[in-house]
Length: 141
Figure (cartoon, one colour):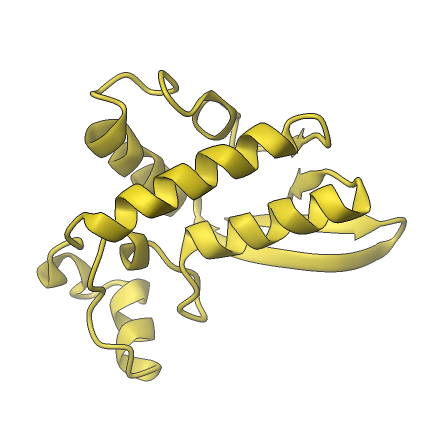
């Protein structure tokens, strides 16, 4: 079972982003804790970090703060070194890197990606912007 984020207008899905396994999302959030929050989860990025990953939504009221957090994290992750290539051995991420001929990530930003190779931060930022434009929440599926 995996984590999927989506925006719906009525019954129509406007956009979605496949995070992958819950442990993958946890690894992403733990990287934020260790690299940007001095070991205290949610101390700097509470909207992203303290939200349960198993259900619910980021409401329209949370989206401006979420977008600000994501953009700040993206800037910081672009400046940080990637996860070591050996970490991808035997994983679905390693298979995606090989299948899509992406090479290994060159920053922490590109170290966390979906099954299409899109970085988590880019996908979630895209959803947050759409949610703001349409006044709709991001749903956890």
